[in-house]
Amino acid sequence: DAGHYDTGGYEHYLLKEICEQPDTVARALRGRIDDRFHIAHLGGLNMDARELRSFRRVKIIGCGSAYYSGQMGAQLIEELARIPADAEPASEFRYRNPVVEGDTLYVAVSQSGETYDTLAAVQELKRKGARVLGIVNTVGSAIARECDGGVYLHAGPEVSVASTKAFTSTAVVFALLALHLGRVRDLSPAEGKRICDGLRRLPEQIKEILTLEEQIRELAIKYSDAPGMMFVGRVRGFPVAREGAQKLKEVSYIHAEAYPASELKHGPLALISPELPTVAIVPDDELLDKNLTTLEEIRARNGRIVMVGHRATDAADDCIVVPKNENELDPILLTIPLQLFAYHAAVALGRDVDKPRNLAKSVTVE
Ligand code: AGP
Image (cartoon, rainbow, N blue to C red; front, side, top):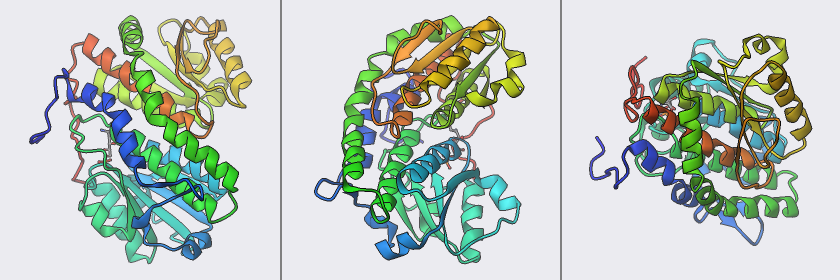
């Protein structure tokens, strides 16, 4: 039930929630950046610097898009705090009798805070004595209550079944957590400042990306007759590709597969043809040349390419060019054109955008 929260003049909640992101990201950041010491203020963690320094590993759990945002988070934590980190679907985690270690920080991600698989995983962790933080949108939800501490997204209600603003806010909170963990370990003040400045630029840059809506709508229409799409990204770009494929599947019902760009030649390259266009995430970072080589490989097999990145290239049929931030924070921005792409493909195909078939907003059963 959306209660008093309506579509505010937008045709669908999904579009409204995509367009809210300059505000929701600003809210995720509000009061949490310290300009003097270039650290993050995350009072809800309920853990002091000494405890935070004691963790040797970070394990992130969540389902669906929450899991993909966790993959983004794991990379941020490894890059900024240099702590080994990885993400796993909460559902898999709870069924495989995981080794629970005292020096691992567990982080549960959930928009609703009510996803049963994630809740059950948190309860199992607590039973085994783990320290668990929650990154949750819904205040007072079951998962939030079960955790030792955490960070709320403050993104407001998310009504559309397909998650958008909660995804980007989660990634922003992970960047803050990574900054925080980094600054109590060995991230320098200068590096901390670089990340703080980058975070502060995000809301304006999201606004710029939203002005690309008409171009993205045209591309979505152009590609919406494809029976399937491939999404590829490398390292930081891979969670972006996974989330892009997830959005397209959920709302347009177009088959979409996400692959690390580096893995294409180990199998899925056999699928490439004009019938299976590729969305390629190509940030302007140290992996740019490798990604451009991948585009050439796809091109050589007559694959059509939509490139999402920071500078247009002839190697792609179509390019969506977004503003550049710091390399570590770029994935947050690169996700947004893919949300608009999925939305407009779904509209073009006449889908039930806010309530896709077979899906529930929160999966509260096993
Ligand atoms: C996202 O678009 C999906 N609808 C779904 O994967 C969702 O993210 C997942 O079910 C987890 O939900 P939660 O964040 O409320 O726990």
